[in-house]
Image: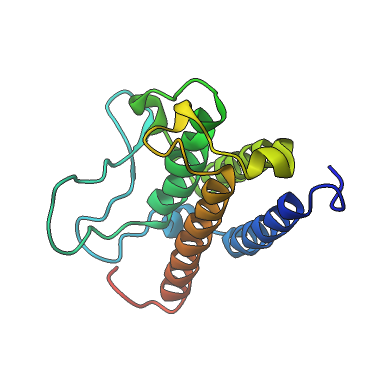
Length: 182
């Protein structure tokens, strides 16, 4: 893809790359204890179930008031699997079954690797579009967002990655300074 032929796609990818690089740099050297650190009671996290597989906790639906707090592991899952991997269906790929979408590594090293893979796959999908398709409606696979453009999806993905990436960075800072819980 040429930046001259596809300037919008090029700019979107450049912004996404900056967000990705900042997030992955902040995750370097993270321990498993930090990855799963629960600074408050009842955190959403990634837990190994009776089947031996690690699963991200499901977000409670229909609750009012303050949302549950989440660990770095859960936030990484949310960016990678819940959002970026989940968006594959909007590009015409088969939807991921809900149980499979909850699967996520329970170790920092594997979790960071899975997140990096999900980021790379989403980036490749956006890069393959080019400006014409990026600016076009996503169509029926995206219902009820079928009239929205892939650009809207890409900017939403950048927002999700930056927003939750900043939360992850803050949790790392709090953990490093021994603040908040055990």
